Length: 389
Image 1: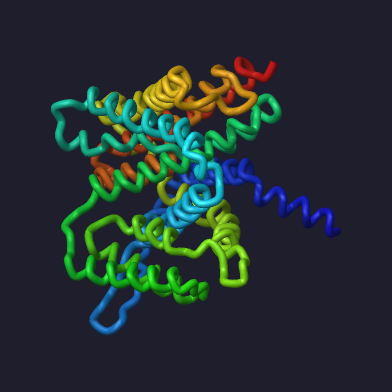
Image 2: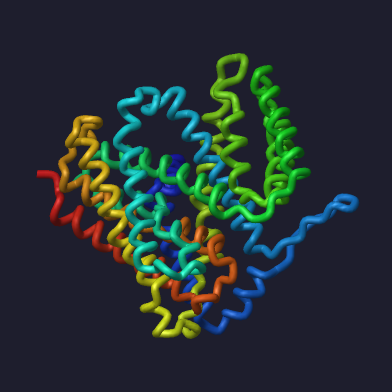
């Protein structure tokens, strides 16, 4: 019995299984939105949820609680991983940073340029330039894991390292380019919350409740400040102590406790809430509009070209080395998978255009098609053309 429980636990915590669950949630969302339950689906997402304390009130549709709240937890986990890697992981050695950093940089610049070239002259459409710059790591990793022993494990580490810089890039893009009107009062409150967490960190205090209270105050104040609330997640992560005064791993414990909720609650719920594209509302003409073509070219062409080109240049000029045991063919296969933008691209799309049906959902469909093509082509290429000799 214990053996069965252990196998189930191993399956549940497997990254590839988490990616498969995301695919299932995506298909389920499409099925529900285009079936007889579409009205209930929309009611579920538009359900108002909130609370009030005195004169303060926070009341939002459930969809925004997911996109502003739950995704902040995802970025909090990214922040924890980033801090851990820089202090005690691979990024402690500067040489190990170069390849994933350059890859992420290429994966942002080239897709953005392609999107801009297609949509040049249309100021409103150009607001979506960042949509094809994102990568859905869970999906990409799931496809890579499905390739089995054909691919060296060093490429998995490369993809994860690339994902960290990719997510940091997404956070900076959101903070700089998708920020609305700013509130000075909210910034002051956010600053005080950060100051308290800094003091807690310097004093070596590791009471989770203290950091939780500060993080909630920070999240609300950042939300009200005009900057996107996800920024609160990564800021909080930087102030979490690595260990307790007794030498016990504190940050690692928090990170491990989040893994299950991220893989099997937060990200699947995010996929279900954002992937429900009503196919009957899509205008055929809109599919071939600048925004759709820009997104498709950016994700399916721009990501793989940008990531591989910048990686190759870093290796060619000896700033970095190929991941151990891999070759350029295998590296290129992983670069193809970075075109799976899916949840992160949908998220940035929502920030860029706000009104989700402005393009009759053709932008969302372009994200899904480009992500699907990147996943299928990446799998075929890695499995049959770049297999380990």
